[in-house]
Image (tube, rainbow over all chains, first blue to last red):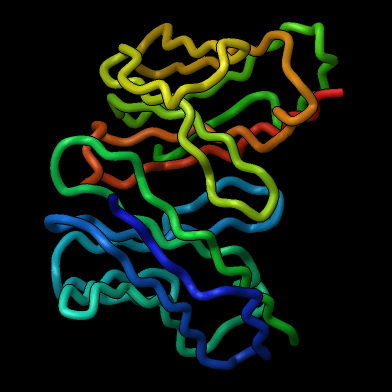
Length: 113
Length: 114
């Protein structure tokens, strides 16, 4: 079945550092890929999405490119802020029919001043 | 309006109580979802409603009973819960139930079962 693998956390960075959170997936067909962010005590917020190969999703300085050849959707940000401290989930949705949204295990990001 | 609202924000209940969680969206979405999230884990799907009909039940115990009164509202009725049911309960909605469409999540209800 479909699956998503994320790098283990926590990822600890200083403010203004470069961020990469790795995400790879296994799926049949051409899934949609998502990054969600969950701040402490809150629900999940959609951060960005990509629906086909070579699409780049971007939002709030975060970017991720749908790489079909490497089955990856790595999240990047050039300069993190303390306010970016949260848990980040990579997720996959089937392109046709319904399959439940498949989440990675989540990566906690801690940014210190 | 791209918001999914949930009430209450926090709920404490005993094992013999009956309570309900409520979820509302006004985005015209036709699919709505209930998820359960334990600490430091991703959300686990419980139920999917598509066009106000129960589409998927992920083998959830009958002490959880979902209801979709109309296209904007989703309830989760709780009865005779166990302490291990304590978790964050998230509601979500999407344009339809195909995986192509992103799901929008509410802030969740933090449930504690004593």
